[in-house]
Length: 116
Length: 110
Image (cartoon, rainbow over all chains, first blue to last red; front, side):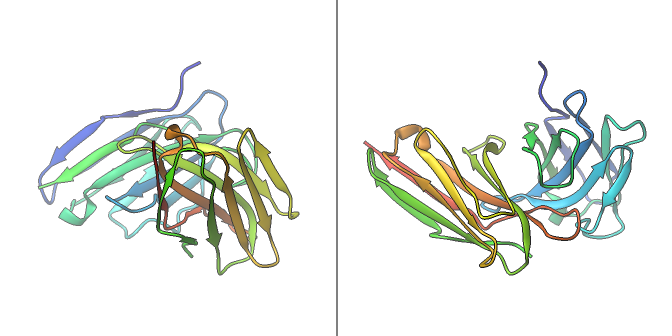
């Protein structure tokens, strides 16, 4: 079956612009995570969805970051007024239904965001 | 919140064993282990839930001491394919966050 997909695979933008990153989870996976990974670092937790609602968004660095999952499947991470420090690989992972952290996470290939 | 892993890096010859440790300052509900190769997404290895169990498959096993908030990953008779960066991932006893550790770079040489 299809795995987690993320689009675009690469995004280059200019400082101050708005970007949207998309994640398409595995069918039937109600849990969805967004992470940010900088070079040489581990993935940094951003937000966790259970179904349509954000069960925990405590990892979002500031109010320029926002994520939605309106129908409980595809999720979009939105970044306003991008800054050079936002450059990183953004990873999405999905899990079968269950409490956060109980099930294996299946990762997408990531979106490499470069802010010039 | 980020778990601390040790060692930061290790180099092994094929066939040697290794232990990677993960320590958290928070009470944990679960510990995951993932391996990430350069330029790729993390790949799941195993999960341990609160209860102090030990798990393993093939030559990779792990333990979880919930009282000490620590987990260890054991790699035996290492193979070249084991090379990569290993991350523990933890979910706290309360809340829905998930935190990856600082990472351990493992290199297996012939």
